[in-house]
Amino acid sequence: MFWVLTGSRRALIFTISLPNQYQAKTLPFYTKSVTLEVARLTMLGGFYMKEQNESFVASALSEGAIPAAGEATNTFSVSQPALRTLKSVKEHEIHLQGAFNVRDMGGYPTKDGLVVKSHLLLRSARLNALTSADVNTLINTYNLGVDFDLRRPEEVSELPDRSLPGVKYINDSVDTRETYYYQINAENNRKHYRTYVTSEHARKVYHNLFMALLEKPMGKSLLWHCASGKDRTGVAAALILYVLGVDSRTIFKDYVASNDFLKPRIDARIARLKEKGATRSEIKFAKVDGGVDLSYLKAAIDEVKRDYGSVADFITNGLHITKEQQARLQEMYLA
Image (cartoon, rainbow, N blue to C red; front, side):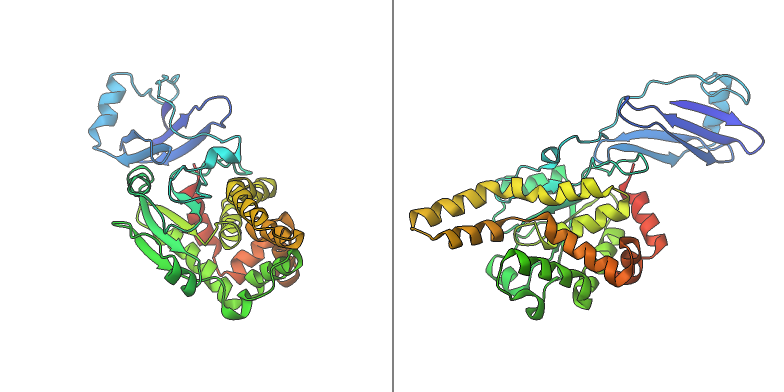
């Protein structure tokens, strides 16, 4: 870390040098003799900076800790923060006993060389069977502040999320009776994904999710989920990662990873069907119903491009997330 005091404006500039796999960032702070204290926040995977008293700058200059303008900088050793690019989608998994397809979105790199912060953006399947240990993990390890449930009211009534102390619960169903009830097969699934774009109701729900991300308490995480954490949740994850600047290839990998996380459940379901003498069509249905296919998400993207021209325009004009709000989201969730 380098501290430099330059010119009459006293621009305090620091550089955090991370390990080789990360890009070092240089950030200027213009101040009137105000020191900035650096404290490691493991939860956020970065550094928190706050103003302190003005006397530090003078004392630091006199002691040579901060060089005067034009002098060579001193180097300070700072321990590496909990910020890293995850190499495999599997590394994003949060292991809970009573929930599945649970992931921390932190660790994904952006096209600009930044990284999505850890312990802030969580996705999962339903939370009805959480154990006490699971609750402790979500509350104390991931500092959960908001549970955003995308399921339909009848799904919630049948398998309600476990109550989480201090966590705000929001139920906002993406699907309506008009958009949800259809014969499940690959082609109909692609048609259904298009309704996430064409349905004004669905667009409003995804807008509300983005608003919740902007309004959640500082330092708290937000978890969004549906029943299996693959379709409604997968589209939400793709939209959020897009706004944060993650590349399409990574977004697609995150989306189809649900097949890996759900494989044990799909295999168990098929095994039960075979024991009962299920037909090939019944087994095929279980596979289609239990997983995802990249063509589903691409069908939604095709609809976006047809109706709005681009994903960027859909975010702005379809979901009504302003450029300023998108910039704020990047400030909140990237490091």
